Each structure stands twice: as C-alpha cells, then as structure tokens.
Image (cartoon, rainbow, N blue to C red; front, side, top):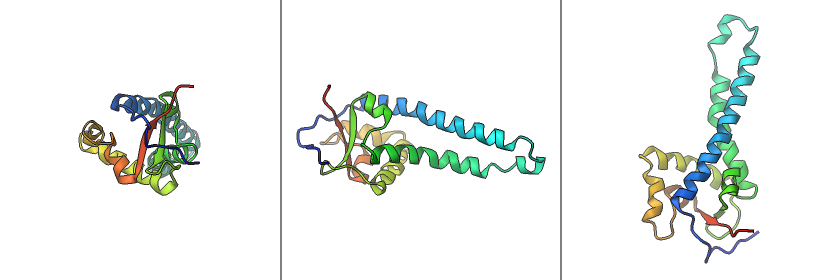
Length: 146
C-alpha cells in the first residue's frame, strides 16, 4: 500500500531515539529469553559442552536483525515506532522488503559505530534522514494522531 510522503512530517532525532530506547528493551527481553533457554538446555550436560556457546552467540547476533526486519517488513513499525508514531517506508512511500530492512539494520550499526554521527546527520540532511535511511533508500515519517 502506497503512502504519500511528499508532505509527510519528518520525525526529530529525539523521537527516533525514544523509539530505539523502547525497542532496545524488547530486544533485551528476546536476548534474556534465549539466554534462559540456553541455560536450561545446558543443565545436566557434561562439563566439556559447557564451554561452547556458539548457538547462543549466533542467536544474540541474529535475533535483533530478525526482530527489526520482521516489524519493518510487516507494517513498517516496531513497537517503539508505533508508540512514537513513526513509520518506515521506502523512498516512494511503499513498504520495505527484507533486503532494504537488512541493509538498514546493518547501516544503523555503522551510523552508531562512528560515534553516532550517522544519527546526528538528521540535523543537517535536507530531508532529515540518517545515514542508514540514505544507504537503504528508506525514510521515517511521522503519523498523524488518531
């Protein structure tokens, strides 16, 4: 479903960060669930198996990408984005696909890795977009209050 984006309000950096803060709590809960399952699965295993946490490490790496990717490709909003009335769309106002979602996710880490400069970019970008918005050909828009 196409959403007109020409006159869409651009969310502030603070609103973006607030949504990320909410979503980080959800990712932490997902990680906690995985660590709990890992701990219970290891109960009763011999001591040689205790040293390998490869599956848990893989889970901790992949689960946030799947969390964000699923929400972004199924309605364009994580729970934090929903609370702060943000929606992710492609440059044409259409929903994003998995390829764009994964590029955005990886690029968001890049935006953060350089001391957050990729996020601060919204203050100087003419369209109010962060590096990960530009690199993934996506944009965040503000939704109207219901």
